[in-house]
Amino acid sequence: MTESKIYKDWELLSKRCEEVRAQGGKVVFTNGVFDLMHPGHLDSLRRAKAEGDFLVVALNSDESVRRLKGEGRPILPLDQRYRLMAALEDVGAVASFEEDTPLKIILAVRPDVLVKGGHYQVHEIVGHEFVLACGGRVLSLPLVDGYSTTSLIAEIRRRFP
Image (cartoon, rainbow, N blue to C red):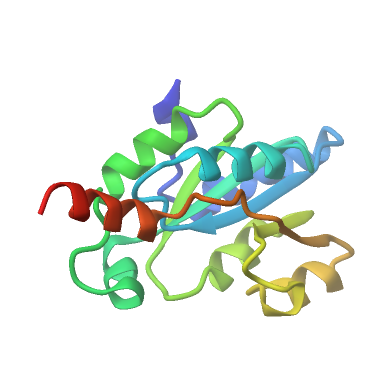
């Protein structure tokens, strides 16, 4: 079941999203690294899914993560992050992108709702102009206090030097 949620071909993903819309559903899109899953991620994904019918999660490729976060990241390689994300009930599809931003995949998916975590304002969310111009919504959901991958990594390093 989880393997069927993994889309390495954006054209197939785009067709799947069109099927959802043809049946009256709304496609929700979010993206991120998701290299150490924590309760904050799960909460954000649950709230994103609640905004529509089919949640697409785009993961930064390993190379993209290294450019954005530095050496030593991601903690888990893309294939493992694919499998973990696809195993979540709220997630309808998982894809990845090589670029530093998800703009190209957003253009391919054409989401009805674009969601990011609350550390972004709507006007800072990549793809907001496109989604709004297409009549969609863009949301910045509040983060759950006390959870971040960076702090989790720091805590692990503190406990296990």
